[in-house]
Image (cartoon, rainbow, N blue to C red; front, side, top):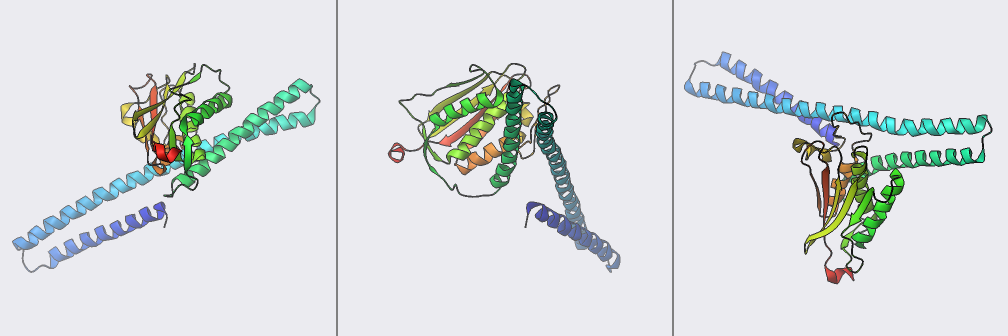
Length: 302
């Protein structure tokens, strides 16, 4: 049974119980031969339970309405993320088919279409990963890996994906002589770090200044910290941003996306026995995301 089916069943059962309790209370009160104190106490308790049930029912209903609203927003966002590059690719193909263009223009068209194709692939992969992340499962390809080497790869990938200069995304805390070994799935951790970097770039203002730092705050843990100087996050939103479909929209700043990136990061962190958390001083003051993972014992990393 899916989560939505379970919630629907809970609503139905709760509604039936409340109606039955209300009918029993009223019928019992009318047919009772006397108005004893015991009957009065029973009526008060039953009425209190009905009120409590109504409150619980209302809370469930509000949560479902909010989840439905988030899913509608997600569908609209995914539709936009899919439709825009498809329309762009179609336009360039029709142009190539309709008229002769120079070789330099042709190569530029190819470059733009490849970028749009990468955007399409990224969106589809995010949706598929979110579906997998919602399932409790064991890692299929766990192996010792150097988190520092993976961090270097992810930084280079972020620069290429967003067409950024070298100083826009920087990396510190990497020492070649001291690899930071963890036990995990390299593809999933690449996705988690990549999503943190993509999120930092998207929520940066006009100028992108993103820094990633590797640290080992304790002998048993490794941190990957991604800082940006972007729009920031209100304190009351810091926990909600990891929910599926949730996207924080700062005032006067619009960001495209599906609302799945940080949810996937949290799921991957949990699969690896770690966690992810966010820090921010508020809107306009940037944010810091920390991915914490268990450090691999030296005897297991060799």
